[in-house]
Amino acid sequence: MTAQQIIIIVSFFGGIIGGMGMGGGTLLIPLLTLAAGLSQHLAQAVNLIAFIPMSVVALVIHKKNGYVTFGKTVHIVVLAAIGAVGGSFLAKYSGGYILRACYGAFLIALGVFQLGKTIKTAVENKKSQNSQSKRGRLIPPSIPNS
Amino acid sequence: MNGKTKTMLVCGGSVAVGLVSGFFGGGGGMLAVPLLALSGLDQKRSHATALLVILPICIISASIYIAAGFFDGQIVLCACIGVVLGGIVGAALLNKLNPTLIGIMFALMMIGIGIKLVIV
Image (tube, rainbow over the protein chains, first blue to last red):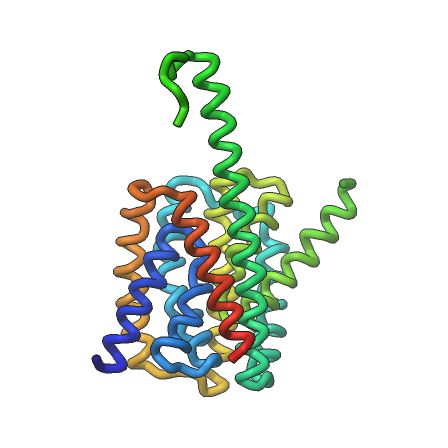
C-alpha cells in the first residue's frame, strides 16, 4: 500500500469518528503519526488544515438553521484566537517527543472525560426509560426484565 | 456561581481553548462546547457555535504551523479526501449504531493510544 493510500484510509476512519461528533480530529493525529509515520508537528498541521473546509460547511448549515449565536460569543472567539497564537508558537518551539507525550496525556484525559460522559448519558437514558415504562405500563409486569 | 466569577471563568476558559487547540493542533471543540454552555447557550447552540470559535483558531494555528514549515500538499489533500468521505459516513451511521457502545469504544481507544504515545 502506498503512503497516500494509508493516509486516505486513516483519515477516512478519523472522519467517521468526527462525523459522529466524538473527539473530532483528536484521533486523526495519532492515527497519522502511528499508522502513516508522520511527525507529530506535521500531523497536527494536517489536522488543523483538514478541519477548515469541514467546519466552514457545517457552520453554514448551522447558521441557516439559526443555531449559531454571534453577539454573546464575540469575546470568546477573540480570546480563543489570542490563545491559539500562543499555543501554536509553543508547539513550534517544542520538541517532537515532548509534544507527542503531552498529546498522549491530553488524549488520556479526553478519553476519561468521554467515558464518564457516555456512561452518565446511558444511565440517565435508562432511568428516564424505566420511569416512562412504569408510568405508561409499556412493559407488562408478566414479562421478566432480562 | 456569581456573575463576576462566571465571566472570569468563561474568559480564562476561552484563552485555554485557544492555547490547547493551537498546541495540540485540535481538540478544542470538546472544550468549547461546555464553555459555551456555561455562558448560557443551550446544547444545540453550544455545538453549532463551537464551530464559530474553532474556525478562526484553526485558520490562525494552521497559518503558524505552515509558516514554520510543517506542510505537505499531497498529504493534506489525501487527508482532506479521507476526512470528508469519512465524515459523511460517520454522520449517516450516527443514528444506526448504539451510541453508548460507540462512545465507550472510542473513549477506550483514546486512553489506549494516549498511553502508547506517552510510553514510546
